Figure 1: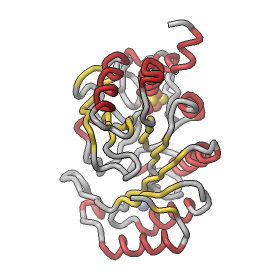
Figure 2 (figure 1 turned 45 degrees about the vertical axis):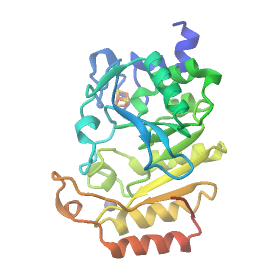
Figure 3 (figure 1 turned 120 degrees about the horizontal axis):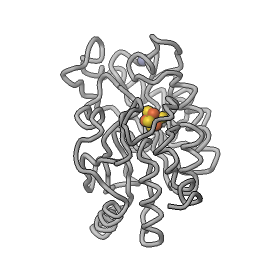
Figure 4 (figure 1 turned 180 degrees about the horizontal axis):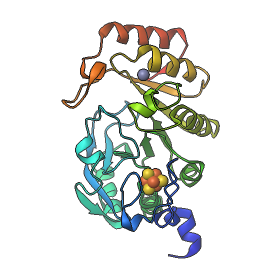
Length: 275
Ligand code: SF4
Ligand SMILES: [Zn+2]
């Protein structure tokens, strides 16, 4: 690959990774970054998925292994925290599978994980290989714990952004973003990244997962901030399911009163809700 092509696909991050705020500078061949994703991407599963938002489904969902976050309640831990789970893939593999799923009726191709951030070089190489053969939008479904360098790479390649805004604005080691999600400086990074792609005029659908015991610290401030981004659509996820390893309030089922409160607050704030 030429130096020019490498900078377009972000391949430089395979030797000096700065795709997320951990800024490991990792030589990815050694899988020594915080996410432990190596230079080769693994896919845990891919399928036509009917659970995405209405505008996207059925989506060709590609679940990459490995994640930049460490959410304590993750239900996908078996592949999110194991970056070599599943099958190793190349741009040629993914290109063929995306064209197959497109022919089967996929209305979007969604790059998910784990988190897709460490896989940006492969995603961009795949989209470049697909070129005009791809007729469905490319969707980046991410925790959005991203650097400006990552967002620069995605600009022009991704059609629809599907960020999570999970945790509230508290900072420090005891904040939800850091203590539960494993992402220091969560709020500044993620709201900044969402605001940036929204300002680019891209379609942005922000997902907020309601978590038991986190209405005041996470849900209310997240929805209130989203009201400052009128172009952004909001998808409230109310299907929280505690995994067996969840602890404390996160081990409980979601309180239906919180679901009602969240829906009412979203309406009161004038959010553009989608399902
Ligand atoms: S994507 Fe992985 S290797 Fe790259 S900076 Fe983030 S945690 Fe480190
Ligand atoms: Zn919280």
